[in-house]
Length: 370
Length: 194
Image (tube, rainbow over all chains, first blue to last red; front, side, top):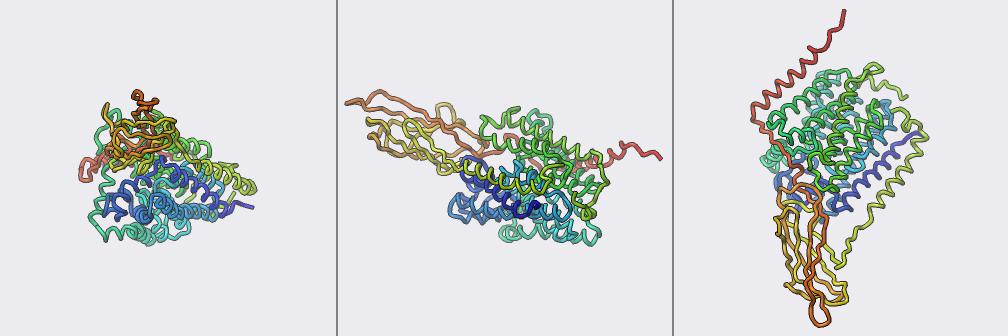
């Protein structure tokens, strides 16, 4: 008997339920979902996102917030939101399972590196990151299946849930065979990104534009490496910090796009660099990396757990310390050690000597399960 | 990660244990939290966690568990970001309300947390001033302070940065750094012999 899909779905349901219940039943447990309800949904009597209130999140979370806001109370808002997001959790596990099963990867890694990962247990119901994660996994699956249109569509939908999936478009386009396929992928990405945004654009284009532009102009520097430079006033020019961060992200995309590394490693590297250098690194961003840890067998369990456990302990200890913002306080230390571990994993992943010849996405299909 | 759940039998066997573990943790989280104090003070907020810049109220229910009547002189709350000696006093029954044994009174204290308060756990104080009836007349003033833990959702960091999309310096620096990062590693890489 081998690990079956229904086992993984049952396990992920219970793990997700744990994440949900800890937020609904513990009123003091912070989530962005809770904050949005009291900051926006309640004061505007569930007005239309962007139009009735400023929203820093993209269209798919906006739709979920509006639908959940139809519920009569905070409790039912949370339950509805949890129910809606459950489908993305299940879909993420399903597509991970399909990738592993159809393309000769170790499906046993799905449990320790995804479903039972500390970040999943705590933050699968915390923000709306799991939606983008789900679409990125689906995009990889369809790319492996040589369906560039669906792959692009999933990337676009992922972009409508979080900005980072768009960064993966260049290596995805490089993997497909012809320029015609590349064009189709680009077009379907635009379509995927546009569809969820369309209702908001029609209702109030200016408000939609303002929310989407302003959300990217002002960033709180949360638990990232830039906290240190800002605290010691090493670099005070915001334009320079932003330029350094984005040039590193663009360089990672360029180097990975033209690299011979496997696609799943390229995706891991780009995501890791983005998380490392972006001015904000809240703990839920680790969800972006989890499926890539599953699909890259080069990563061992212990370093991964150390990194991910430290990440989760930021939010778990945030409300237990007297001042979580204290320079060189416990939260700051944990954040920086976590960043150091991710940087080490990144260096190791990009500079290690590969024991076997590099495989591209196309010959992954010929891979045989060990 | 060789060896982890490699055996198909092990993969199947471990599932029920993991589910049982998660369910037991889940059951643990279902325990209700009940606050008990000597005065039997119960408090609820309109909503919790507290959100900065949003109107909220603290509802206090003060139950007299003593055998003698108690005269409540004042009720107030204080948040750590308030000025020294500043507090929000109660609204509800008038000052100097008498509470018979096993009776209770309720108070509602509205408040609004400033927008710049950071997301964190804070301790707030609720204090009561009262007198207890001694045979025929009330005794001296006594006070009791309750320390309540509250979670505030406010600004996520004391540090922020802004990006001006019309700032030409940003695009110049971005182009320069990207070009350097693209070409420099190639220049530094040792050329292969032959």
